[in-house]
Image (cartoon, rainbow, N blue to C red):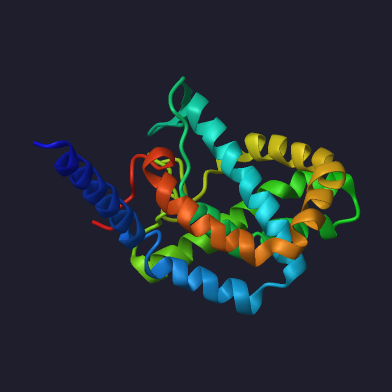
Length: 213
C-alpha cells in the first residue's frame, strides 16, 4: 500500500472513530438534553459552580477508580488505569445544585454529615433520569447485592462521602469559590469546548463503555 493510501486510510479510521464517539449514546440525544437544560434552566452563577465541581469530581473519579475496584461484595484495593465517563460529567453539570445546596446549612458539622445524603439524592435523581430516557444508567453502576435503587447508590460508601465532604468544606472558600468567579464569564464557551474534548478523549477516559444492550 502506498504512503498516500495509508494516510488516507488512517484519516478515514480517525473520522469513523470521531463519528462513532459522537453518535455513541453519551454524545447523541443525551447531549442535546444537557444543552437545553443548561441554557434554559440553570443560572450563570450556578453554571460556574457546576463546572468547577464537575471537573473536580471527574479527577476524583479517575483517582478513585485507579486505586479501587467495585466487586459484588464491596470494593477492593487495586492499581490500574483510572476512568470516568463524560455522561456523568454532563449529568453533574446539570444537577450539581443538589450538592451545592449543602452550603445552605450554616453549621459546618451539618454540612459535613449531610454531604453523603446530598450525594445519594443527586445519584438517585441522575439514575432515574438516565433510566427514564434510556432504560439504563449510562454513567455508573455498582455491582453485587449491596447497592440500592437499581444499583445506583451504596450506603456503605458513607465514610468515603464523609471524607469527600471534609475535603469540600476545606477547599470551598479558598479554591471553589474563586475558581467559580474566574469561569463565570466563560460558562457557555467551556461547555462548547467540552463537547469536542469529550468526543476526542472518550476512548481514553471511558472504559469499559456502558452500552444500552
